[in-house]
Image (cartoon, rainbow, N blue to C red; front, side):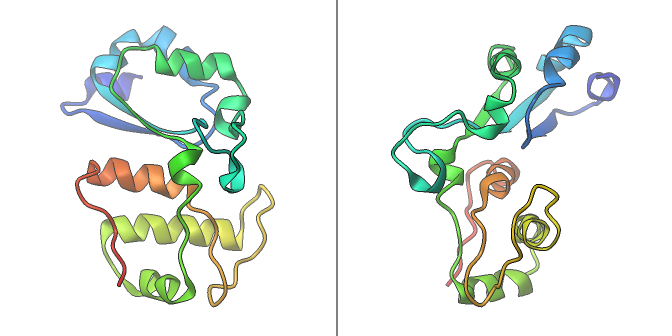
Length: 157
């Protein structure tokens, strides 16, 4: 909280996991809402996991719905990326290869997230074979949207 309050510019807070600590932050440092923007990966509006038509209590929200409601109602600017968007993005094998050889800040974020999920995810993801498939980009989508302010998208040929 003190770091955010002392910043001379707006701080981007990436919420790509359950937000169980944010009610405490907002209680202890209520001024952070004027110095930060929340970038949130979570929720399910029309689609669930695996593009299912069943709405679900997406993991980041389901862990503590009350905590998430505190984040949503705090009064700061929020960019929300629900499963409806984050759960639909994956790449074909040729796009995987291109992504892993393209060096731009946005692509680096996506590549790092994909490699994390494919090679050592402590939450149990299986290893990926980039010649066959890639994981769904749940958290990477939120990060890229926040970094680009939704004005540019990563486009692969």
